[in-house]
Image (cartoon, rainbow over all chains, first blue to last red; front, side):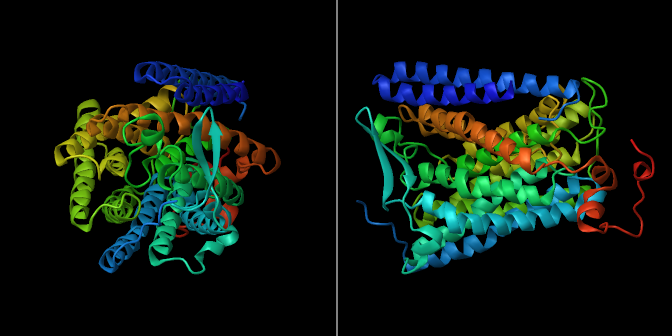
Length: 61
Length: 429
């Protein structure tokens, strides 16, 4: 699950890059960059949840 | 292609003097890491800092400096949708660019070597008391040989983050002073990846949602680290302002004043909030707050007024203890040195404040793109590569080694052989 979370963060980063290239207007760019950041945040939340669940099970990594 | 930047002789002398101060930052962080760990791993912690510093310098010189390149030097440029992306330097291999380099280039390389060492030792403090030294050196290769050079190129050497202004009209491109992004944010997220891989120290979380306090063994070391890191940061911020930002010498004292103001107001902020929350100020958290203020100054020192530096420091001082508590109690992250909170948290804070204070259209967005780059690119890459290495070279020491302490287990002798007795060294936990 943690690997999926990391891929989600990478996806968010590429969304940020794509937003820069696709849009010219600052407002649109801002919205889509923030969307990319939200995807990264989702990956972070998933990663933290996975960490906490694996700790409860006594599993490292 | 631009001509490489050259400093005057007087500025070169000043930059050299400032760079020679910068190892105090590493000495201070080493003392803080050691003091915040238990006595059974004190020497291991300090030796680890020296080893990682040495390894980082060698890895960076031999390999990383190639990727980093320098502003005005050849680089790998990809054209995507009509935009030019300068994504990787094209320097000489194995430090070959040193031959015939100008004094300014050599000084910049010297500063890079200190900065990469700083980035490498941040995760070491977070993995204290359970991370094997040999595998930490292997992990340093990923930071010093791959991630730091790429990010440093993007920020300082004409890479795509520094040209967000000219390419996409986002302010003047990413703004920072002395490594808030490629050193502290990178070091902080790498520390998070390492903590996730290592897991918590034995006994830290005996039950779900219950965290045991494991106090550091020497709060004097921890507090003594504060003035040392201040001197080091004077060197780092001043030298970076000269060599990376190309500020005139006359502005360096203002950068140093902002550095001191950030650290001082952060300490007072932490002192106030811990006094309010716990009834008495917490000495080790105050030291963390001080360091957090210095980290925030790595972003803001060269770009804001003295008043904004004080506000930044106060915010850093309030943020640091709250983040330490949040990560430990809510997210079960065992980070003995507070590296994730202090370095990643305050680097993000500083970068955002620069974006707001700069007052240029799109500047805040440029800062957000920079932060998203480290969290969305450097953190996953660092985690995945470290997890891969961990599969073949286990990072975590065995339970018996952790119980007796890494001084005895990895170095063969304790730091305080005359008087230290741990009850749990004689009874299994």
